[in-house]
Each structure stands twice: as structure tokens, then as C-alpha cells.
Length: 76
Image (cartoon, rainbow, N blue to C red):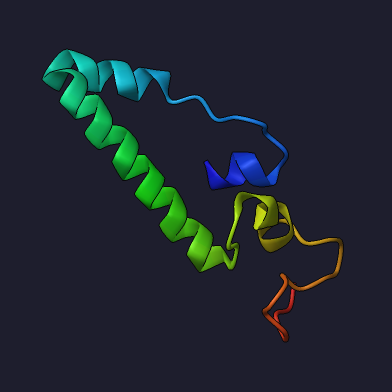
């Protein structure tokens, strides 16, 4: 999800996992799946240095020859 959002996606679809969760465990399983995906995205965003969705492109996809923001000294 992080990569898609960093490359400019306005949305990321998770329909198939949600349908599997619904078939296996009902509405409660779908809520658990979506909560898990939300937690995972927040974790990966923190690792990338993005505090909000608006900061994802700058944190993940730097300009040519530029180190990711907040990470001086990275070489490409």
C-alpha cells in the first residue's frame, strides 16, 4: 500500500482480502482485517519517516540524486 500511495495512487483496493475475511469469519473478521491493515500501514509509514499520508511521496520517492528526507548521508 505504501508503494502505491507513494507513486501517486489516490486509493488502494483491498477487496479480495476483505471478501476472504467475510467468508471465513463474518463482519468481525473484516473489521479485524481492516484494523490490521491500518496498523501495518501506520507502522510502515513510521519506518519511512512519513507522519501523514501527505508526506508519503516525499519520504519514499525522493527526487533524482536526493536522499530521502530526514536521512542525510544516504547514497544511491
